[in-house]
Image 1: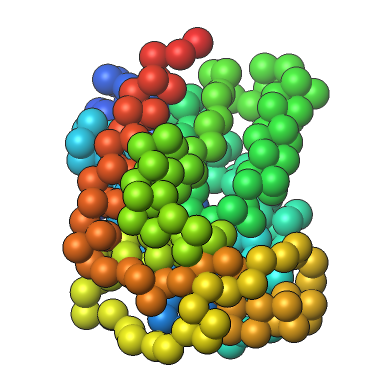
Image 2: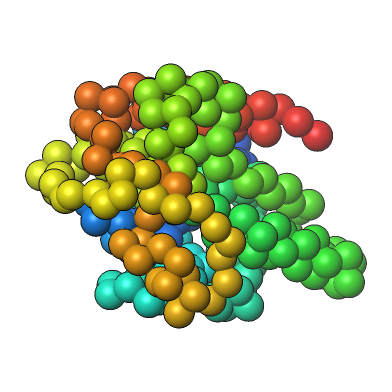
Length: 249
Ligand code: NI
């Protein structure tokens, strides 16, 4: 169930039966010639929503803008600087912890968020350690789950796309948005078919190295039919991971 579709009384009642919550987190950034600017946020949201339905978990509103400074050379991309994203994650967790939530499962759709999310979790734990029990909440646990890197989803990407999966604007994530939002499907030529690989620094350097925005991928291979398989597999892994997280100490 979506938190933002509940009344406060419904949220309060659910807290009597469980104190876990999923929080989708993505990014709003260019995704190559045929990928949507919202790809990472949309993928995290649809996978979390599906997993939430599968295991009757509460799903918070998405954090739709992430740490994407390297994409700012392309129109439409938006970033939070790492310190801002850390503050957003800390305030979100501490708001929900105040109500009694204590297990926060971040369903992430963007590799560029990983380091910053990990730092945010460290800030949350440091805040508790430095303030003793003064935060008006129980002990909290935070977990990062990338929808795109579980063993089953990686095996499926390998089977479908092999070396053309790449690492940004991947056919897997484009397929997933094509399945979830078929009205948004775009066609575009890819030249070369598989984009170059390389390191990531700042936005200007990124645009020079990766002129159409892709890294190592060929998203022309994407299809909504593949997206359905990717969705089902990702939802299964995320749901299973959430239940394991709830059970863990
Ligand atoms: Ni992406």
